[in-house]
Image (cartoon, rainbow, N blue to C red; front, top):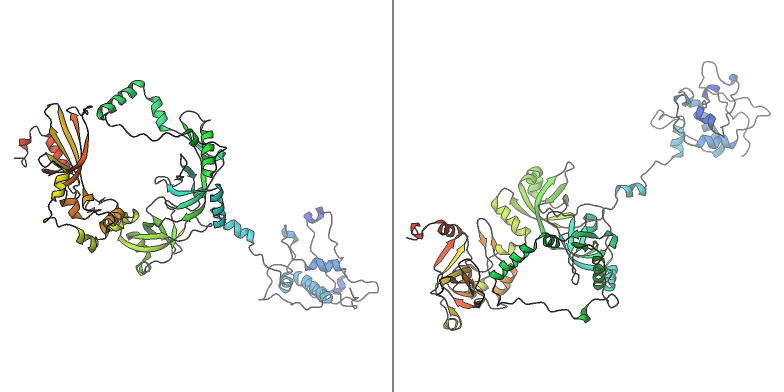
Length: 572
């Protein structure tokens, strides 16, 4: 340090010297306290005024260590007695300012900004040096936003794993009653893979095509076989009685087809197994061989990638949080709650709370990041008020992917259908079918049924104890040309949909309700007690019938409960 001229060093009065706490006394290294100067350096009556001291021949400037100590930010004292008094604060600050000015060559402000002190003797010094404020570190940010799920594997890693057999793929099925349980059927494996918990499902939903990694054997689960348990608890007499009943009900002349026996060369051997699924099956068989009777080993797996999302829309209601955030809750319990929706319609913004309590919405899945428990969604359609039947029916059709049933049949299909009032049975069909129009044929269906596509018949045989019973199914394939527009539409609809108040048919009504004379039938012989005649043949073939009566369940039950049919008004 360069020497300083005499008369520059200010003396510090004794009142401005901070007292030493008990904690500081216990430290090994104690701070060296500068002795107080003579009391003559202060003016009488003004303790806060500092006069320059008279230069002495042997006086040395303060060591640099004292300056460095003054530059450190003040710490909060433990005891109240260690806090300097308000009167001593300007003296200590001015002294430090003079020392810093002499050493660093810079002028510090004489008073803290905005007026007044912020509560400590070094406030003005802290403002001049600009000590940085404490900010949130990346560690704090990571703790707050901890990922809820594991990231999915990259596409190249998935392809490599599927090729070498370390990964498997399949369609995810989630339990409707417990969304924590999910299963995947793997072709070539004799049991399903079990995915336990939401973390292992890893943002996959029901119907998604997923890629899985099989977990170690220590994480597999063992479940009891209900079939083995029920068989073990049944007595031999019960088993024999059940076998006899089944034999009496079914004709022994009809032999069920047996699956082809596996050749010894096709048996799996661990040394000859090449694919990953075969290796897994061998391992499962080895584990199964060590379990007790009635127990079944079930491998567990975890989702590592989603190959394809199921193209499904979900029905539910929205709710508004205190922060005015719109969240969607699906009626399907297999979906997570609280899906964030951003594209709400104008009627929602006019009255969000009224909209949330009255309207059914249709939402599709958008994105699902690893840091969130629920995905984001996109509003597809507002189905209508939740209290109306039409809205509920539309929600059911949408949830089960049956909206196609609401569309009318195309003009091309309508033009290909016969007119019911003009259609007659062709002579070619009369020649190739068995004519049963003089038999007692009738149908029993619900009172609201429209698809009268099945009927039954009963005929007494010469032996009074035996009857010939038949079941007749409408031969609609006669009217459907393979590959035609009607065939494609029927395959797309797959089935008729029955509601409480209406029926949505798979085929046009003219085929289901009016043109049912052509049938495929099965006939067999039965006794009065309901047992089958063992030596009687069972006949299958195409027939022509004429229904003599269309009964509903209530009328059929009335016939059974009445002592005589002549008591029924409609019969008379």
